[in-house]
Structure formats: structure tokens, C-alpha cells
Image (tube, rainbow, N blue to C red; front, side, top):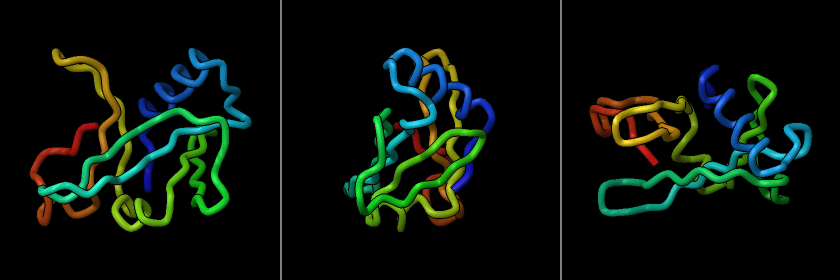
Length: 105
């Protein structure tokens, strides 16, 4: 799982706004099954859970539970500001088998 520099900066800002130090907190990524595959949720958390996988890039920790790890392995996390608002995006590793555009949470 990769994290873009823009995604790393956005996570740092969100953690600062939440009052969570980068040294102890991180971004949780959760996959929820739906009729089209999975919906991806992002949240700032104070720490990892016992069964989480922890991925660290750009000085940021990302927490992923075992179920979600199967669905995000090889994905790229980014942050984009569009007319619809600012949001994290997750691009699956093989987009040809999924949607043609990045999945947005």
C-alpha cells in the first residue's frame, strides 16, 4: 500500500486538527463490502488495534485490519481537492478489474 506526499500532508493536518500526535496516531483504512465490491472509509485514530497491520510512509502510520488488508494491498492512497470538496482517495492496484476511476471515500 502506498501513500502519496499529498496524502501524507493531509493526514498530518487532520491529525493536528484532532489533537493526535503523529508519533502515536495514524490513519485507519477500512474496507466495507457492498454490491460493487468495497467502500473504503478513512478515519484518524490514536493508535493501532491488536490485530492491525501497520504501514508507515512519509512518517505517517496507516492502520488496516486483516479483512481490509486483503482489499487494499497494493493500493495507492492520495488526497485530492475537487469542486465536490477535499477527500482521500484509494486507487486499487489493478484498476482494469475494478472501476476505471479511483475509488473515493
